[in-house]
Image 1 (cartoon, rainbow, N blue to C red):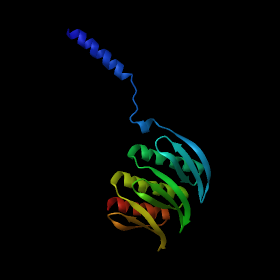
Image 2 (cartoon, rainbow, N blue to C red):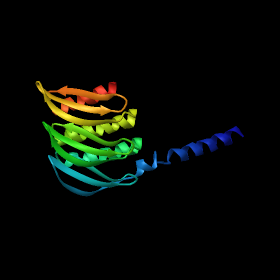
Image 3 (cartoon, rainbow, N blue to C red):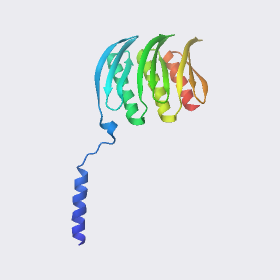
Image 4 (cartoon, helix red, strand yellow):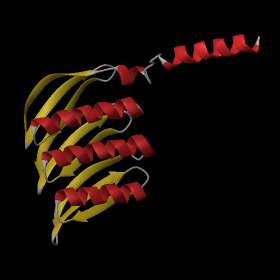
Length: 180
């Protein structure tokens, strides 16, 4: 009788080894590019993604704009936080990107390039997804030797970051918010 059970167990394990099951419905979903266009400082790309709907990404190049949109979709599949790019603009020393994210509302990121600003906005959205810390860029100003980026974070208040570039100042402000 033991030999029969061993054969049955071996058959079941062999069958299970060849089955493929997606990790989650969102992981099996896909995106398709619907539109690309010029934006202040670069480009925007509009994707349609299963589950998340329309997602706009911004970047200095068409490639980085598409990557930012896909990375916003990845944030959605991993955390459930649904973000979409709303606008790109110039600011002191660089650019800003405005996202709208479910739960967090509007999030502004700053950078020396449009790609850097998109990255910083997405990084703030990721901070919300990972830690529940809701931070939004408020301003960029010149300071001695560089720039000062001001964020407002729920539970922390105003957080400053300084750097020789807007991107450096934004990254330092985000790091201060992460540690706060």
